Length: 249
Ligand code: PEP
Image (cartoon, rainbow, N blue to C red; front, side):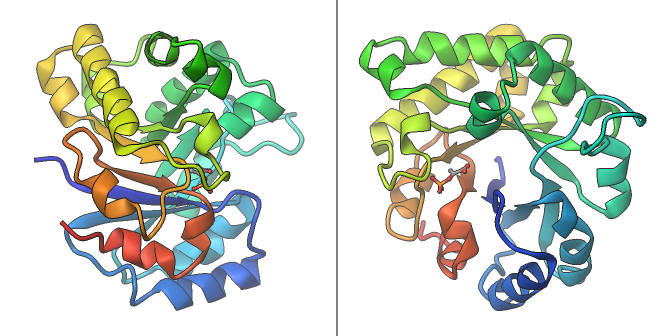
């Protein structure tokens, strides 16, 4: 049985002082021993948030990472820095990085491999645009993203990672995918993993839905057989996040 994983993506929000306050506000609300809870935070917040969540069930993740070990890459953050700061997860390939920072599948594949090299668990994002959904190419597009991003990733590594299905048109728009749309794509992702690897790997990998998930729609989405959690943007900065972590079965 896969454990649910609910991760917040804080995006470019929260100064270090605000981050500590938010962790304190959410502390008693995100207590659910049956669920893995992760705060993916801006690089500058990793150290204070790791400190602030000590003694709780919450793990910390980075929102991004570079593919090199160290050196002349001004402004970038190396995987070893993330690990040393105490984070365990890293979001890779969020649609905002794909769109605004031109991150390609080839580049993201390097990031996925690099994260594993350092023992970080990737939360790999994929998702289609509204035009692609309307053109009926969603499933083909998602399969292509997954296959490209997982080149040379072993079955054992894939089994331990997280994939977040995030339709671009649903991110930050308040427009959630219907339960059927979300389940259809998450199921197709699992089938793609079975095709690349095997049934056991597909059974182990955790697949999240992300895109305007909130306190109101989380119960139905999280009840779907192929949705193992959520990647939450806007609602992760509010007490609503606690309601999602404590979704009703
Ligand atoms: C996200 O940024 O990954 C996300 C899903 O955002 P939101 O929940 O705000 O749509």
